[in-house]
Length: 193
Image 1 (tube, rainbow, N blue to C red):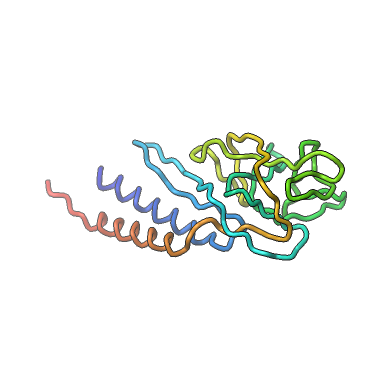
Image 2 (image 1 turned 135 degrees about the vertical axis):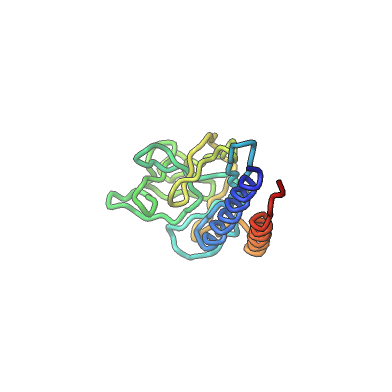
């Protein structure tokens, strides 16, 4: 049973590293690590900031805050959080995510321009939330998250930039090779009765 547990855990680690590497070019991708506590498996979402890359596109926004903050968006299921600042304008003139969810300010959906501190030209402020517990920050589809957050004013918004993934591909490749090698060693174990 112990060999089976080790095999399962190493396979999960390997698959996690593969997933991270597959998302190397995903805007604002947050690297994940797995932790095993008894029979519990926990995912830690790394909160470090990826490099900001110039795009020159006026509706691209990168958060410059050491990776701590997230844009607050209104999804059909409730509030969600993202660092992917590749936004568009809806037909009503609101700032929205690629799938049409509203980017929020403290006065509702964002419609007017804002400055580096998130202050809107019509009053109000862009809503930026900070993750309170990286082990309980649930990754969702399309680069968004749910979990315990608090609003923050400690950020700068960089227009015309997008954040890149927040991990080193060389380090992640090394971890993938390491977990694959350990998995192979466990597969070759023969238990002596």
